[in-house]
Amino acid sequence: MNKKDILFGLLTALFLALVLSPFASSFPDGLERVAEDKGFLEKGEGEPVLVSPVPDYTWPGIKNEKLATSAAGVMGTLVVFGAAYGFAALIKRQKSS
Image 1 (spheres, rainbow, N blue to C red):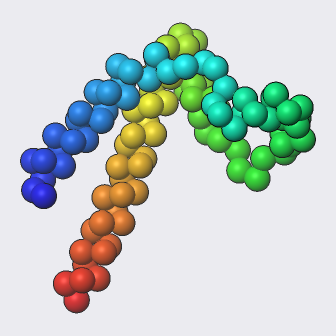
Image 2: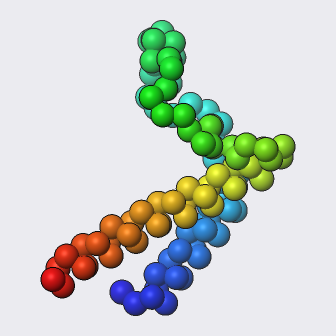
Image 3: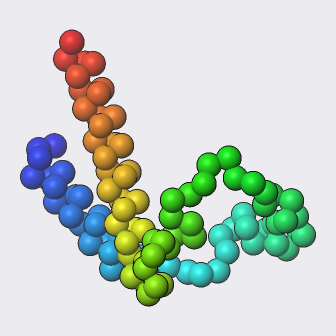
């Protein structure tokens, strides 16, 4: 895979995160729904081990909820891309030595 393909993939992912993330469902996911239905949702809520910098997929300080969700989607995409790219570079360096 060349750098042009990687850049195209990143730009596509960023575009999708920017455009589609505001349309994400506001309903609870499967696990949260089961916890609500079975009545143990509160037991799982406590003091978090790590505090999320972007709670509930909304960017702090941005009042428009859709824009905040888009910003969170773009930032998440960049973080995951950076981690994956760094990991791949580390593996490539290890294989070449």
